[in-house]
Image 1 (cartoon, rainbow, N blue to C red):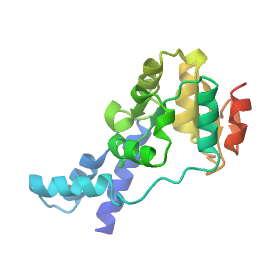
Image 2 (image 1 turned 90 degrees about the vertical axis):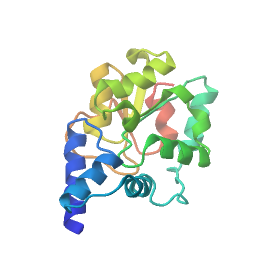
Image 3 (image 1 turned 60 degrees about the vertical axis):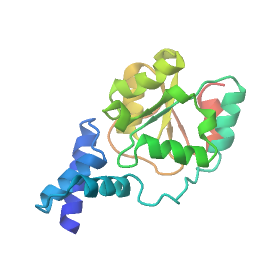
Image 4 (image 1 turned 30 degrees about the vertical axis):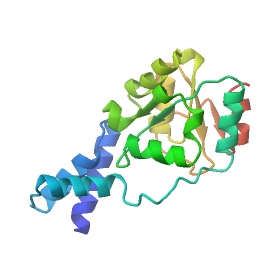
Length: 195
């Protein structure tokens, strides 16, 4: 079981590095194939629910300063969106968690781009364009805040967006370009955006 699960994680990582979404259905199919098992539709539905949201009682714990930074940006009239590689936790689940954390209200409802809904992952331009189009924004007047060089910084910069890398949770030293600004604390976000 452990080997089959690890093979699934490796397959998901390989797809992610090629900017292809590899979500719950793909993980389930991969796991069943690795174990040489078949599952009826009912069992697949139960597996999908378990993979998508293994602990529905678990809430997001926002990084300190995020809620205040979002509220500050909204108060300045800045429209906000989300561009997220959903992985196994699909957009529907992430929306619920953002809602329960009190963060969803800061974002424009149509500007939420989750990879399971878009069909590709960052750094592909489709991910960023989904949010930009919903915001009515052009890349040169937009910024993306993320933590990964390979996906967040590379994707935003390739489109001509300003890229801000947050390293206060995890400092990504992987491949890819550096952000136009790097912050450790969300209180520094307005100045990183030139506000």
